[in-house]
Image 1 (cartoon, rainbow, N blue to C red):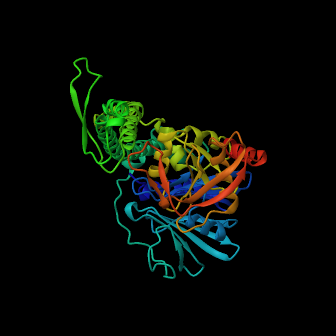
Image 2: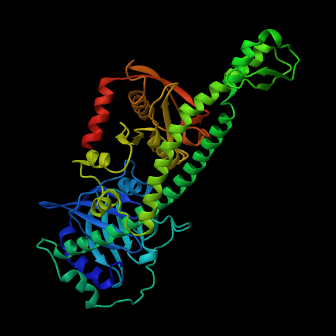
Image 3: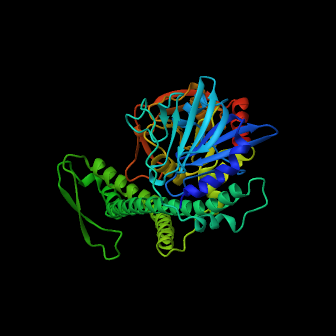
Amino acid sequence: MALTATEIAKVTGECAPALAGGWIQKIYQPTDRTLVLEIRAPGRTHRLLISCHQETARLHLTTAAFQNPPTPPPFCQFLRAHLQGARIDQVEQIQEDRIIQLSLTAKEGPCRLVAELTGKTSNLLVLDEAGHIRRDLNGVKGLVGQLYIPPAHQQRERGAADHARFSQHIPASPFPLSAAIEAHYCKAEAASVVETVRNARTGILRKSIKKLRRRIEAWHEDLAKAEKFKTYARYGELIKANLGVIRKGQTDVTLVDYFDEELPNLTIPLDQSKTPQGNMDDYFRKHRKHLAAERELRPRIEEGQKELEALCQEMTAIEQGAWQPPNKPHSIVRARTFSRTGEGKGRQEQRQGPFRRFTSSDGLAIYVGRNARENDELTFGLAKSDDLWLHARGTPGSHVVVRLEKGSDPPPETIRDAATLALLYSDLKKSGKGDVIYTRRKWVKKAKGQAPGAVIVTQEKSLHVSLEKKRLDALKARSAHE
């Protein structure tokens, strides 16, 4: 449940004296509905969290560590351009409602940041000196330029009963109510995030199980086709022993089957358009297909069945309520909700979920698959159509994906960073140089009937790269310490 107007009044009363006269020195937007203002006040730095999530709309001071996305969202970019460096003149509640107003003096002059913490309709708005809307978090069409009018107040208070949920265990802190609210919502969001992760995993599992079953069926069909060629080595050997008596144009030939102890006659079909030698070669070639299918498809089917069984077991655990995400709920909340503080970020990212993770020199996220299964999941699960996709040309290696905003082009240095990683995690690593292809993810298609990670690429470009120690060291350093 979001904060009530009474709770907002109390936490505003706690925060406002500490924030008034402070300067907004940094602005983060850890998630699409959460804003964090880093405010420098005399002798201390505070972080003000404003959440516009439907179920957890709130405002309070926070001491938690945050993890910021590699690229700030457009709303955050706007705030940084216009509000970063602004002085906070006043923090107040509007009309005793769930609306907080920060009166600011920015480099462009007086302005206001209004937080409507009203559940489903929660929003953040930037107003100019005259009260006209310059930008809002929800991107409501036609709102920019309009005179801001606070929404009609709706009385939904339950008074002291609501505040009791934060007053029972207020920790020892300079801002005890903020600390209690933060602790409460951290636990609530953990449960919410676990449910979100569970639902997302269910969707991935259903899709993966369906695809894997189709793939196993296709392998069985290929194996059944190849099984017909099992006796073709015998046909080839019999034709080879009787090349002198067979003539081109025959549709079949009857020969003594000396592979059978009873030496029966065996009629062998022939292609009348081919010579006896040609028919013999055809039978040997088809028998080699049978051997190759036996050698390659049976282990593939066995491995696929094991993988399918594991996926089905995980799905059963979800359906029975026994499934738990790989990370603890508290860790998931931090990974999803909070921005970085600088220390330990790369190590956190390395631990969360699959794929190797790096950050380019331009601050963009780069993902690298570790094996065929991860390559498949990265390209056809995580990557979006406009993301950049890379792979070492003509050799086994990792799929590499660069996260891009829709409609944006990858910076040249980011392409070279990602191409270097594609070369590093490929069979070209030993040579230290080679060509890497790259294209948008939408031009990468899965190769039907092939092993996981096998793809067909179109509209690709090529880049020749070398493993530069300086570039690799920088990538690894950012991965470890950013």
